[in-house]
Length: 86
Image 1 (cartoon, rainbow, N blue to C red):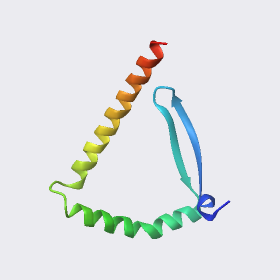
Image 2 (cartoon, rainbow, N blue to C red):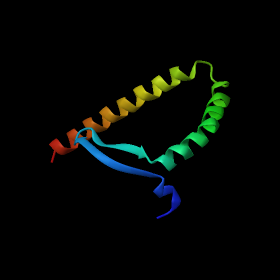
Image 3 (cartoon, rainbow, N blue to C red):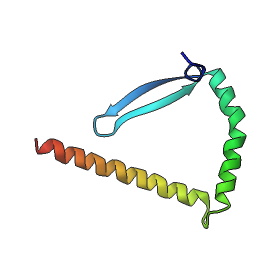
Image 4 (cartoon, one colour):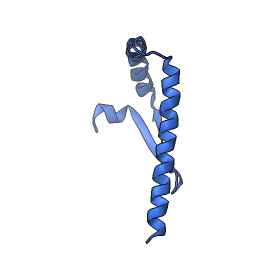
């Protein structure tokens, strides 16, 4: 097993067929240390991008979350329509 795979464990929790699988990432102590060391780079990159936005980054994040939910619902509708025509 490579070192990247040893730094975390993951399990799938399936809520329902309509919502699909949900994954919960659980970091080990080593994985948390690696994440903590890399966090300043994430913040710096976010700040560089945010300077080029006309609106606060939070506005864009909210729009992305709304879009993701709309896509999930549309896919669920399509899946439901496909299964009902069979």
